[in-house]
Length: 231
Image 1: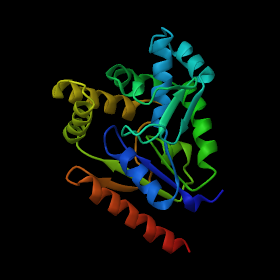
Image 2 (image 1 turned 60 degrees about the horizontal axis):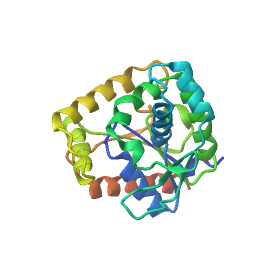
Image 3 (image 1 turned 30 degrees about the vertical axis):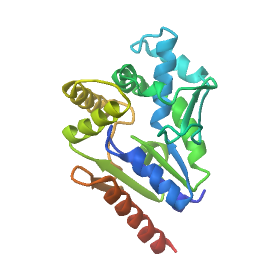
């Protein structure tokens, strides 16, 4: 396993990690893998089957039996990838407010994390990958050669998420989006299994007052610097 070509980007919701990770992967010619979509897909599958998010055993069963896959974008509609659930394109369905409200609870279950982590690690070990999530640098691939942790204030992250929803024609009050961000932060950072936190050796970047281009350039500069050092 070539750990020098494994890059992880962790951070809370709407910190910019997915967009930055995708841009970095494109520039490096690496695979972009947003691991958070797996938990969203499990949540969607559970809700569709009438499984209550609070029913841990049933949700774990869904995670262990659902066919979840990630591939290159199949449509030119702004997506960064295509998410398949049992061969169905659910790329935008997993971004619904109902998923936002339940994914943290679903992703906190040890059985769900075990099922998803196994797949994530298998893909990451191939190298030449930028993996994005909440526990990649700490749990999934702690041996990764380059780790980042992106963050921003809850208010700024809520603003970004609200604007994203508006652009997709989803009218949701800003205060509701902000409350959702804060609620998810609490669940993600206090869960017993793989809580959200920066790895001890991660490069932490506060993106609150940075535009997207600046964040991408800063992350890329770090990668080039660290790669040169490793040679």
